[in-house]
Length: 564
Image (cartoon, rainbow, N blue to C red; front, side):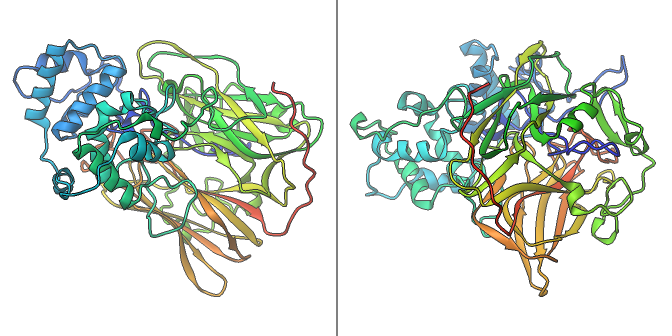
């Protein structure tokens, strides 16, 4: 994803270089194979050697359409995980006869299995005398509240879980995932912050699912079902207006195709947006997408041909195709907090206003609709353009069409605070080969009283963890966000339940760690030194703060306009 594009660089208004494979099966059981290092033409790609045995030939022939054999050999799974993985792959188009399916299952569990964890063994034996649970009365309310936003037809999850018929085949796997707290996915430290979009289940809810599965996963009386959630043509909001980019053909096997589109709003008066959502029509090939508000003059100055680079950018970057990379001769600044530039490429101190942006919404795995609290909204001045930044990554072996859109919900209540975004980056780091805990920092000082609304951490496949601290003017230190187990395949924005006041002079310190070793199963190439770049097999590190200026603004709320 890109920051607001200035001539001195191609910032990444939300530098999202998210790794999306066929759907987001990666968040359920499948860890996506990272983009492989580009090999010179005619150089054979090394494949891991599979153990001999019945099933080897099937795996070698049929399990490499969307990933390499590393995906099979690197990640050992329990019998239940392998069984569910084969189900998901079948849903996604893997063609196996029933006999072949069983042969592959026996082969991978024999050669790449792992023992059931103690927590799961404990979960299987539910205390005697536990109250019986049924799907209709006890489990459906939990799934409706925490799971079906992704697990419904034509959404990001690999299977739908909106009714008993759909849920029942996955009952054992659901229990295993919730007991391990792998589902619903959430990567922030539960001891730090309180967030509106935290989907984690309570211990009581996990207990209910355990009891239900151990009791036979019974349906119960359908009359006990709560009202089912209603979804609107793929949207998680009900837009007042929708803007779309032209249809784009994502070429087969082009994994880094970055496109910019400039769409006029034609608004004749200022608009205030309380909620927004970016929605690709073909999620399988959209790596990420972000939408910025820019002025008509900015739109005229930008070019949609991203295969070229401006003279200002060329001092710091080079391009391959449409993807941007840091020049190898640029200085190395790992500790941005100790540098006056903070690790920015321009090598001059950039102020807060230069790095903030008017971001409406982003699309990436794990990110839902952007919904602001009542009284908070993003301003779209009349006559503005929307800059769509879409990163296509097609690993599917066939050309696929996409038309990405953004839906906007206008504020219906008086707006007191204008929402903006500040993006804190270090672009001058260098991660050494085989480094398993490489530290990179960036700091900034808040220039005025602001109200924090949401936080986002962004790294790529080698990203390990990130923490952002606030050091207040009186010397107090507070952890604002802690992501101890960062996962590039599922990136959340953490929306605060209660807006947080950050007084003028507060210092923000971002500290991230990278794992570029063989211990990281997602690592594209541990032997390679890694620097900043847009492709997923390179790296980024950024902390994004959604905020509002503390003093109220006077905002006229206009009526919604007709859909485009």
